[in-house]
Amino acid sequence: MDTMSESKEYWEGYYSSHRDPAGESPFARFVSGFLKPGDSLYELGCGNGRDSVYFAERGVNVRAFDQCDTEIAYLNGEKANDHLAFEAGDFTALGYRDQVGCIYSRFTLHSVALEEERRTLKWSFDTLKEGGMMFIEIRSVLDDLCGQGEQVGENEFVTTHYRRFVTFESFVQRVEEAGFSILYQQEAKGLAPYGDDDPVVIRIVGVRR
Ligand SMILES: C[S@@+](CC[C@H](N)C(=O)[O-])C[C@H]1O[C@@H](n2cnc3c(N)ncnc32)[C@H](O)[C@@H]1O
Image (tube, rainbow, N blue to C red; front, side, top):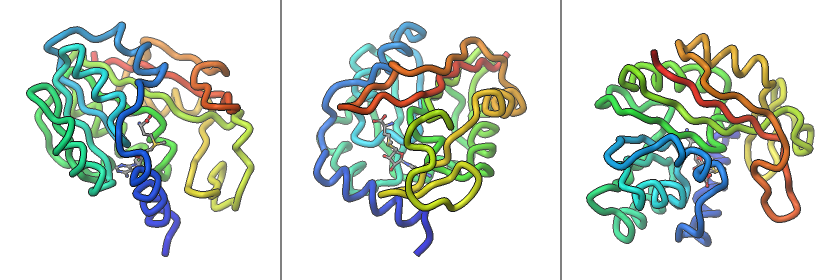
């Protein structure tokens, strides 16, 4: 089995015991400052939908994608409403979709290989309306986790699942190469604390001008 399907199995297992959204992320709170009721948003890799639910509660029309079919079926049964729909799928291969005003990716672009990241950034640019915004939070190479587990490529490691850590300057450059203008960029600790863990993460807001 390859590292990607092992990671899918890992997330299926994780969400089978964390089925319900339990509080939005700090990044979602940050992003909510850019959103207004009536905006349309795609979430790439929604997990148990905690941030999707939070955005939809603020009147944003959300379609949230994740590879975990069982979790997505559960969320569609329990949490979907007029503002919120979930869809099972690979966010690196969604094909043509209606354009939206916002695309949101928290801790998901480091779950896929570099070529898939590039494809997803390009797809996101093409799928945003003019003036639309892409919000990304992603693990940095400065994260203490970088280097742990089995190395499977440059800055790519497998522990319980696959992660590809990114360098700030080169990631910003790839976002720009996809066509985006950078509205906001930050690399810091303290943005995504989780238990005892306080990783260095990168936040980017890109705009399609
Ligand atoms: C670290 S979790 C983050 C979940 C959520 N964004 C959050 O912040 O709580 C990564 C998520 O990305 C999903 N994922 C990873 N690769 C994917 C892919 N290629 N297509 C769809 N979902 C994917 C996983 O199933 C998992 O739910």
